[in-house]
Image: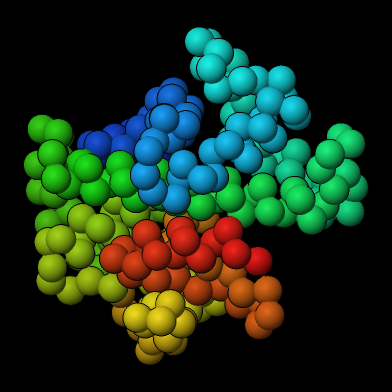
Length: 231
């Protein structure tokens, strides 16, 4: 790495400038889908709500959303039980838990992607400063370490154009979805802007068959969310 390289470590406050929620705003936005009348999320939420109620004792109609379990707690319970082959209570054997996890991931992907697109259509004032900052990013001199799952960095840089293609890792290959929702592998390019994501990303996909991880462009994320609930 060149000596003059600058590494930016960003969290939820960075994405807030693009209209995405902070951690304290995450749960209300997540639960908003219980009132949706269209879209995939309205089909996911009844199963997710039932799981949360039966496992954590929280109902979506309760007023105090601050008592809703953190996503980290939900994923920890799911992963510890499913990965060790144990039930979570009487009603949730490992195969059911893996299904719930996929549905939860799909909801989060759709929620964060919609929040980004809404911020793009109706930008908050801070978004101008964010774009001005990203205009000065040089893939050869700058790197990002992101604690977020969202695609604010990737989406805004694509919007600005210029030299840009994300590089996450040599172990994460770029793909795209064709019109039949089939995966098409793209040429790898390690010269793009390096973005290290500590907790994963909503545009990443793991294949159980080939044991490989892939990433796809921002424009394909909504279609990816449809694929995720399918085993």
